[in-house]
Image 1 (cartoon, rainbow, N blue to C red):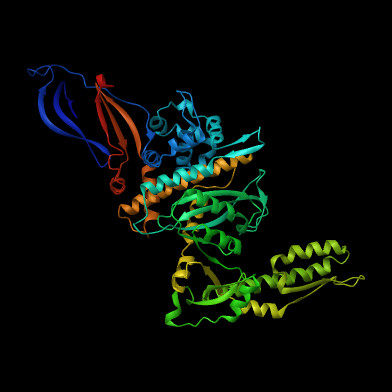
Image 2: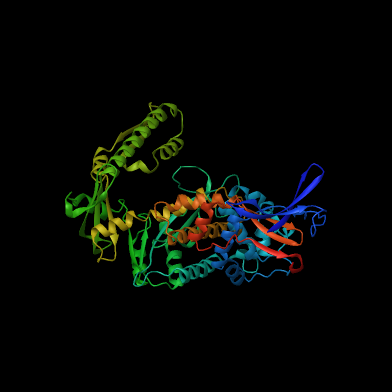
Length: 564
């Protein structure tokens, strides 16, 4: 844009025509021509410079990117359509509120308690078409009730999350179909979400890896192996294990109407009924078999896995993984089972068991002295708490008649040696017998993409802590977190399609969002002209938007005042 520059020297003002331009995200100017002395040069009367005025800046880069992805995935339309939500013309719809909430979970989950003020510092009000004052805390909380709400007449909770997952997943597959001839391969697993200082009807104390005695809910997620996209999610009581959740999983897969493929599950979920029902629906099943099953223990004891080139699968930290196929009786039927060995896991299993049993032995010895005057019932309760799941390796009894120490115990050496023979040895069942032993093991060990989904949810989306107490609000909140995961997945997939390497995409994605979070939009008035500028746009951002095929996302605009 050209303008007149006044340069005062002594008692004279010299006029120059200059032009402003942008370079590297900064505004610069360059000299065009000399106009003469102000008031003395013909055709150059005394002029005043146009005043430059600007409004407040708003964070624009990252929110505009995620808003574009959410619109592409039909977040707002799907939520409002299935939930039947209606809003006043001067108020955002519930789908709009929840979409903005999901964007917040991706970019700044720590601001969850200040969601309204956070939104008003960004371009989200402008993008959604509503003023700042409409984005209040109560409005966001009320929008959760569209997803899941109480139905007093039927004394139950109406939960739309499953229907929403189906619709959102159908939209995802419409945009990103599987390659021709390829069937869906999905993994299902559970993770726990702890509650901190609040109670909820579905929050119960249950098993978790950190052994924290806190209420929790268990969240199940189905993730596609092809594009790492979360397809469905479920919320269960914290005390439920994987085996008790499979019926909902199969119902959801059937309702999705996706062509049956391969379903990979953890060893705590496999069971005869689950296998039969999955096969009845046309799905093949792959999962680990629990060593607690007598048939599996017998199979592992009888199976030898030779360490030969033909049985080699892959390399682990301290050795190789080898696998073979065997035929054995399982659940009353002869089935094909894959047995594999992991040298690294054999060492860690043995160390973990010996360490745990040693610690339990010391605790029982101490209890025998401290509990000299305890009742038998109290001693038995204490023993159960100390021994936990390791009871098969210990023989413990309480002595009577005032004899001390009151607790007498020994290791079951036969059981310990038997377990040692099975260290690092595992059994897998795959109903698709066309897959080789190597393919079965690699597919099972490669299901860590569902665990990475949980890691993203807990680390970046910050599922915990849950700040809601009502069951309907907890379920709706978890749905919002899943929306955030869908946004993360959409961004990752676009970057991969744009040429970012698989082993670099996570870092690239995080860095791009950080850079975009510093981009601000500002409206500038220069006389009769109005311009939109985006500040802090770097070359790395420009390159990232090119890979995403969104090079015009931060396009600057100019208009005359009469056009406004």
